[in-house]
Length: 153
Image 1 (tube, rainbow, N blue to C red):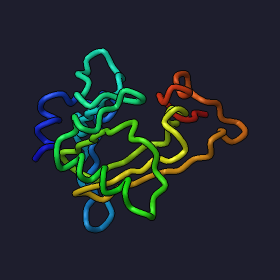
Image 2: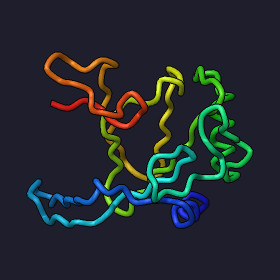
Image 3: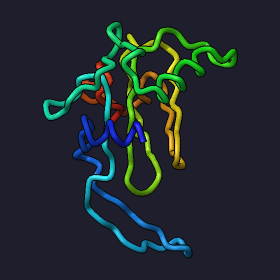
Image 4: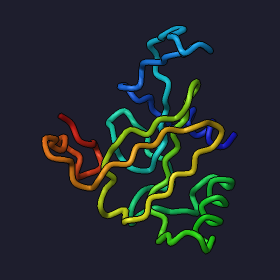
């Protein structure tokens, strides 16, 4: 409920996320719809139409400003001996109204550190991991060094 309230309050729709494809039980395409299926809430400035979340980002990230359930999850993950996580620098909520969550290949800001933890809740997920340097024949998109993109052909 906290995450949904934040999406309504300060989430923005990802413009590139407009295709929703439904697959039938037999594997055939059942339908395709064009609509924004992903809303994003983050304390990191990403777009002019965005309202940054109260907890901020990077060196200015304030975990005490997180909603209670999200703050508790972050504290439990940081305290767990299986994870070597440093200071919390970023919390982003990606909410989908339908379908699975897909995290496209991208480069996170180097200042965020070497450890990135993704906690997926209430849906299946597709994650793609790519090497830090693009393979031969690909070049990094503009803005990728600041966390804004991945590799392109």
